[in-house]
Image (cartoon, rainbow, N blue to C red):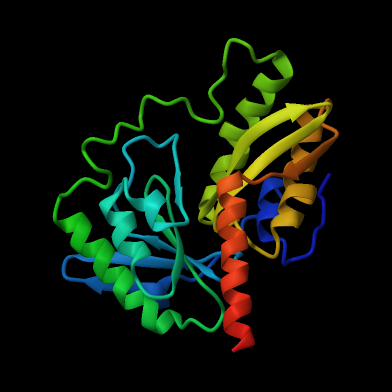
Length: 246
């Protein structure tokens, strides 16, 4: 049975197998020396996805989200991108980087050249994306099935890893498993999904519907945030209010 959804819910349509959105990327190709960096729009108007045509991460099962210079200290590339004026967040996927600007007033025409140059300079230098003393590969991923996981949790993690994450990552973001209790599946949104106007539609109409189809024990899907994420968001809101009051 074909399910019809509003056109604005692009990622939901993909999750429910009602079609894949096609985008003409030709105007958004930037040639820098010998590297072509493709720029793709995301459902979040504040976020763009940069695809340099080569791997960013060695481990395809992981993604990394940076919302502060402190978090970015483990990655020279992330730190340089976070220092660009107007940039609020950086996200690494297997073969892409998503960059989120601080607000609508920031001009992508000003930010993009610095992002292009930073990505190109770092990748062509053959320097590692992460500091050599930072070993992040031994930590289990959010969808690693643990000995204490029951069958329901194992099914949820498998579905996230095989069906949902690839679709969300295509739009420059990610969803992380954060827990399952009393029928409530808790997820964290990362990258372009953070602060996206359509994220609630993605959760409720896309992920929830797919989960309930394959895992009937799932009664609802909600977004949760780390305390660190909440603190950054509160500080950002305070700063924005101070600027607005001037």
